Structure formats: C-alpha cells, structure tokens
Figure 1 (cartoon, helix red, strand yellow):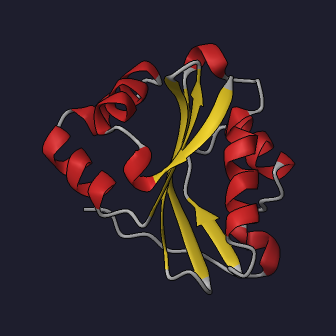
Figure 2 (cartoon, one colour):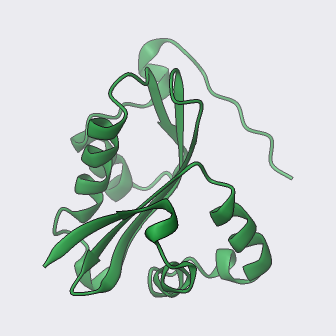
Length: 135
C-alpha cells in the first residue's frame, strides 16, 4: 500500500538510504550537512510503499510566489511507476496559489522529458533567463 508522509513524519535515516540507493552519493558524503538541509527545508514530502521510503521531494518556499524544488528522487526499483509524477502532482494540489515552481536538474534528455511531461518548461521558453552561482 502506498501513502504520503510530510515533514516531521519522515525519518531522516530512511531518506539517507534513499539518497544512497538513488546514486546521490555526493549528498551522503557529509551527513551533517544533509541533516541540516533536511531539517531546514520548509517542505518535505515522501512516498512510502509497504513501509519503505521509495520517493522523496524537498523544497524551499515563501508559500505565495516561489517554490524551489531542491531534491526529487525515486528508488531505482520504483522508477517509471509514476512516483515522481505523484510527488509533483501532490505539491500542485497542496500549494495551488504558488505562482512559480522551479528546479535545477542535470541536462539529460530523460529528466527533460520527465519534467516536461509534468508541465514544467525550460525558463528560456518564457523569454527569461536563470542564473546560478556555485561555490
């Protein structure tokens, strides 16, 4: 049986296991930083299947104009089953008044197709540009 959990209902250690299984090793190199990020994200949403965390979304927001999706990951054995799409749809349902939902992802065709299928478009499509400063 599948169910959603939010914020304090989500176990950090289960999320760490999901990061590892999804191949996000860079995040797991410093668990103190990951825990800090986890604890300070306003929105955390997870999908559980038979008591196992199989999908996770983490975001920052002002609850009105901007919603920044920082992480969206799905366990490899559960990919291509609609779990990522369910997480994005749940966010739309929970926060309908937010004008902009943004994310930054790797420029790979599989991810581009996934996000476009879920209603996202590249920022350049709106005659806008986006900037990033990496440390």
